[in-house]
Length: 94
Image (cartoon, rainbow, N blue to C red):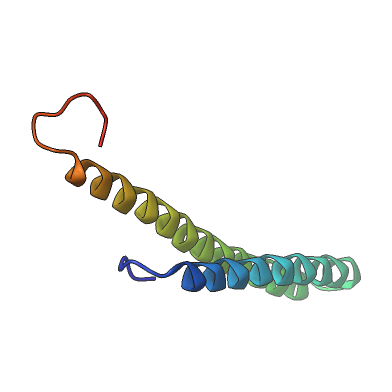
């Protein structure tokens, strides 16, 4: 995800996509738990653990991207707010 300023509609799309990813994660984890309960070999269990790790890593990357986006929005706003304050004005009024 780039750090360029996005329009609110683009942010909304990113957040919606993240929400879909989280619900898909929930469904996938349920299926993995069901498969693990039915797994009858160590190899099958290892495959499930590997899939679970990959699934969680993917969600963590998306969460990090969303978090970074929100932090960038905050930073951009605060920097613009400070930049508009006249030099030497400590009153906080704009």
